[in-house]
Image (cartoon, rainbow over all chains, first blue to last red; front, side, top):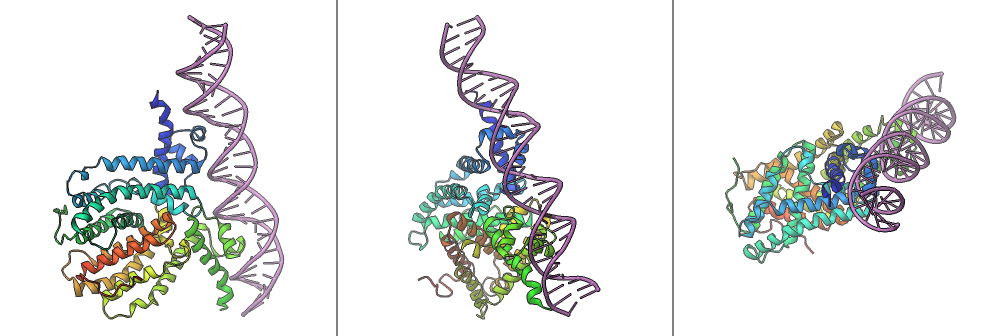
Length: 210
Length: 210
DNA sequence: GTAATCATACCGACTGGTTGGTATGTTCAA
DNA sequence: TTGAACATACCAACCAGTCGGTATGATTAC
């Protein structure tokens, strides 16, 4: 049903929102900014979204769908060993640090920091998006734990949150230092931690350090 | 020089800025918000600060001074063993998670995420503040490394950045989940990592878990 | 077959409230 | 008396959101 034309303006606005908000922050992003980036008029914007906040909600959901698909089709799922998949995830996160800062940083982390106290629904949408991602990750962590550290005192889920905390925090430093080097170093520490708690004192898989 | 009266309004504005910006974000914070929170008029604001951006710069510097003093006088510096001091730092960070979210989260992390692409000088000020804090921390890490892991492949500084990444990222999740529990769990993982890389397979100091 | 009706997508000038910043004082200590 | 510290009134720019209108294609009536 003419999906092409029907959705293109709305989708263009959503994609533009992801990029502009990640670069300028939510509050500093104007509706006109997004319209300009999407090459769409304001009239069209308010035809598709009730308000700027409504766009933020849609953008958060859109981001969740996008990233879910992106990570689901990533190659690190192939190994049969869940620990290998987990370490593959960490390596994959390091590999995708390319292009501009606003290309690889997380919309939800940016958004929630600005809105947590003032926009309850946006905060909730960010929480959901991030927690959903962690839930998927936690499945592998759970399996790896059963296999390699069944009696460890920590929960698989807390490891998932730890991994994401490292990423989100590293993104902040990437912004402060204007480059992804800090993220890579933090991911190396994170990988080492995972190797250690899963009882692999030497590398479980050959590191790809040059 | 009548420091009391001379500085009180300016200081009140700075303190108000720290709190309001951490709660609402920088862009969403209006000059009037800060004036109201400080119980000071707008005329006074623009007497002390050239602009809102100028206030942000001063607030970042003020934050740096405040936290430096705060951490310098914290009790975790007492042990002679640098590793104990380092683990003491992590435990201390967990202990101070009290009150409102905007009381214990980091101004610079919040600020830099909103301004990194649009306000170069604020970004630089945040970078400086965070890097200075890490530099102090790195002294203990360096000493601990010499003592317990002299040949480890990682640099002391990268551990400092890793620690701060965990904190900053955990703050984001604290905001998403509206409470510090996630931070405590991530700090527990962080502590475990430090114990592991410094070769203390069992706890170096008794954990204070209830 | 085609004219009338309706729905969706889109356009861009306009508006009313907000906001950073200014202009013009007043107070008061030294 | 001078100048720093405040206070009040005000302004111009900006911005989210509105509104009247157009273009286009589908549906229906006859």
